[in-house]
Image 1 (cartoon, rainbow, N blue to C red):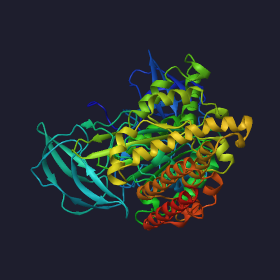
Image 2 (tube, helix red, strand yellow):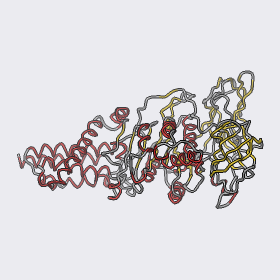
Image 3 (cartoon, rainbow, N blue to C red):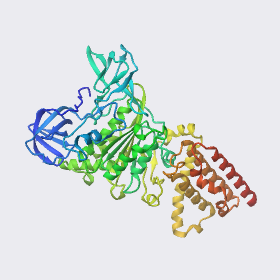
Image 4 (cartoon, rainbow, N blue to C red):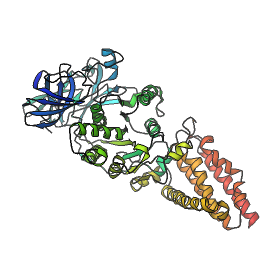
Length: 599
């Protein structure tokens, strides 16, 4: 890793070969004698951005991140001598980028509504001045990842300026508090009798994971405020999630809800190969959203990467790595980052197209044989890490999967399931019934339950695991009972079994289903979720006992307090939890009266 050189934002003029063949976004160059694997290059007279993906003799295969229309054989290929390495520093948060981290607003100013080929711009404004506040003094021993100072980047976010990895030595000088650009040298480190200049910005190759001191066990959930996620299928900070679902089942909507309400410090949203109208909704809606924790614009802690389906396919392939590199950079500052990749299926389709143009041997359904490896490499960059500076940070990866026709047996979904520990399966029947989030409680699962159970029991309630197990057991029983009902009708079941169906119906409508337009229901704190779960389990246990004592199911349904259970998600706010205790008292009194009558 020490020999990696960052790519310059300027086009280089070192000719390394000439174009021999053009096959869509894949270019074959000949006469190549001075190029390296994954080198960033400028292709043709238009200086199109590309990347060397294969070297053989004096030939190189280059994937180009822009439209290659009009490119001709014989045009030169210029090398940069560096890998694709975007600039990371103050100015990233709140910005909208394309798949290779070119700011779309800057490109708009340069080329108008339609992007010209070959146009580029640095990821961050190199002329803007930031107020840098140093936190270390001259003479201190420094190392990679150490925090030198802070910059107030947005109202919600303090950017911590860190020493680039692999830099180690003595701090020879550091600037005083003041206004500086990302190009200014703010410190100098004496390392092996050489002075290494440190700027507020640094570069890192997108396809290589940034180093950390070590991985830590996962123990803290990523709280989303969505009850079906937090209570039934939670994900830990630093975990991995797949959200598979057919067209129209709500993958994008679920990711939007998680992005808005989760308790991550930074959100990186990657629109990878999605339809233009969906990305337009994201780009127009996110700046209007208010962060529920601070009351400020959500863009104050969000980075958007927009790579729609009509953009070059090779840039779509790179966008995933660009997003996770940004996440690792903020993780190294000691922040918790959530990455939304929508969708990894479009990314895999880009891999398939590029692989086909490079005439590689196809595997299942035409995908390249290395598809599982690429998926694994992406998801393994998640984790709850101890950074080089000794701080704790995390990257949580939430990837949507769009299986054609909703077929979960296709390769992308199946391989993704091998590498993630949380699976939020979206159900078309629930989506058609307007039950959102449309996460199936039968096909979904989470392997983080044992990791985070102690956190829930300490912060919400000691019986959380017990209540959750009770509800999940009832939902499994309901599936079997409904199969009987379809054959012989509900009247053939005894009241004790019909009561299980009633409780599950109550749980699905009053707990799992959430209304994003209702102020009290769109987000639930863990305390509210626990109280709601406790009430429903209490209703089941007391009802089960009452039926054994001779109380009929009709009488249970006629209890006035039952309507309080149905409406509690709307009627009780996150701050007014004492109302749940009042419902519990009325519920207990109603059961006592029924048992007294029938006893």
